[in-house]
Amino acid sequence: RIEALVDGVFAVAMTLLVLQVPLPELPEALTTEGVIASLTAVLPAVASYTLSFLILGTIWMGHHAQFRYIRRVDRALLWINILFLLCIAFIPFTTVFLARYPLQPVALLVYGATLLLSGIFLFAHWGHAVGHGCVGDEVTPELAESVRERLSMGMVAYLVATIAGGFAPKVGLILFAGVPFLYMLPGRIDPSMIEEAAIEE
Image (cartoon, rainbow, N blue to C red; front, side, top):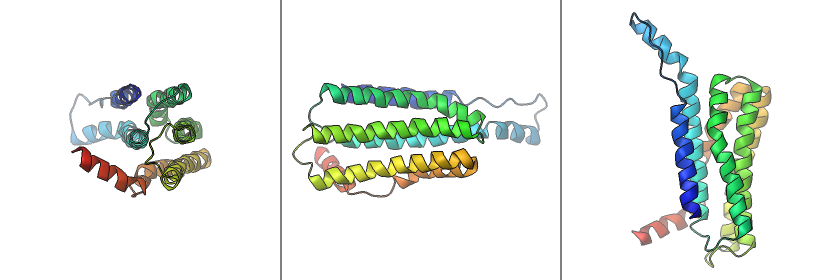
C-alpha cells in the first residue's frame, strides 16, 4: 500500500508539472517571428518542467529500488515516507516559482531546499529500514553501504547546486540539470535489480 501511495503522489506531482506550462500567446497576425517569440516566452517554464520531471523520475527510481529489498514496514518508516511525500508534492510549486524567476537566488534556494529535504528523507528511509530489520537477508553490509553512498551522492549534488544558485544562479541551474545524468551512472545496486527483473519475467 505504501508503494501505491508513493506511485500516486509521484504521478500527480509529475502531471501537475506539465499543467503549469502555459500555452504560448500567439499574436493575431501570425508570422514566423511572432510565433518564435511566443514560444521563446514559455521556454523557462518548459525547461523547469523538463528538469523537475527528470529529477522526480530519478527520485522515484531510488525509492522503488529500496522497496525491492524492504520486507516489512513499521510506524517510523511510514512517517518517514509521509514526510518524504510532503516534499515531493511541493515540487510542482517550487518548479513554477523557478520558472517565473529562474535567475533569482531565492527561487533556486527554495527549489534546492525542497530537493535536498526529499533526499534527506530518502536517505533516512533506507537507514531506518536497514537499522531496524525491515530489509531482507539478501541485503549485505556492502550492499547497504553502496545504497547509502548512492543516496549521499544525490544529497551532496543538491546541496552544492543550492549553494551555488545562491551566489551564481546560472551555475546553480546547470548543476541541477546535471543531477539526473549523475544517476545514469551504473552503481553496485544495479546488477542485482537487473537480475531480479530477469527472474520476475
